[in-house]
Length: 412
Image (cartoon, rainbow, N blue to C red; front, top):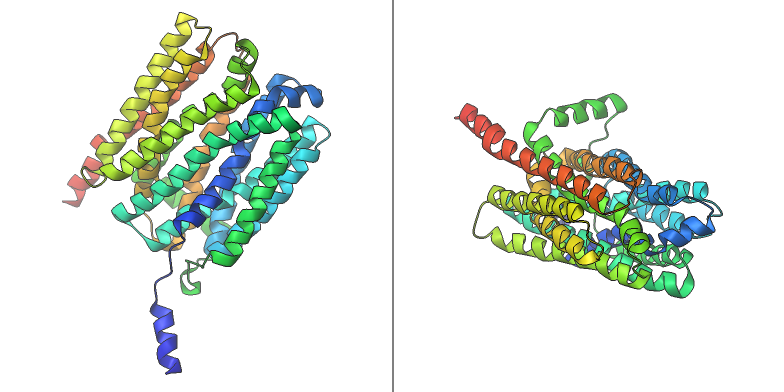
């Protein structure tokens, strides 16, 4: 009987993490990315830094998030998904508290590096767990829940941060983030089951790891879908970098209202992601992606026209960006699912890491460039939005109509 029970246990497929747990993990990580934005002018003033230096907090977070995924993904392939997430949440919580205590901008930026390093585990390992337990359309639908959490976090974070900043100062936003991370840590400890059995774990050495990344980089379908994610999501990173100056400084918007403006955009992204999830029952995933990049590129063009118009109110800027952000919501979950479907579960952590590195790496580059622009109007942001959304549309078209068709023809 014991042997039979053991055999049953060995063949039992891993239990997928609950939607609530996935949502909590992704929400915590996304909360840390931009909850402080309403207090950005106050941070610059208190720490005797320029606004440009304070804006660099976005780029630093994204860069660290991207590079850390290249480590966290393989760690989860070697030691399992659960311990990697637990370790990441520990780092994230402690670094968030350190951000609140930072005496100068240099210390704050270093703490942001550590904060992003811990937070990235929730995203890269969360995607790998979905690959462990599902594939195809089922994976796309599961991935959509992660995408929704990725939207709700940035939607609610600045809204919460606006009130926390107004009532208690900018430090309270990081304290709040540390407390949320600690709560999610407890949730993970008590509820998360391991989804990668020891027999399937892949303990790569540095040489093997570089070889695996090189092999993934030569996979045109994986790279194509990952680039579409990177370019489509870049618009949001440019928006988060530019809007504190455009709205708070140039247009005199209050921190509370600014948080509301930021909240509207990811909310549309969440609606688009849910819509995309429903559309998978009626049309192909590639067609949904093409609809998404068309919306995204249209919004980019309108944003440049708004900048050339020289508007002095937020509403036209918000409207143009809303169109792009809705398109991003149609794209992200589907592209991640399609990219990961090209690899085996044994290297899903590494693939998720490389895709995430491309995603966050482009966001970091774009954010750094936008932070260094002279924002006397919304036009510099408009050109950034146009560039990244049109790159996303062009990549999707080439991938779906050229690369995949050629591969299908060769296979036939």
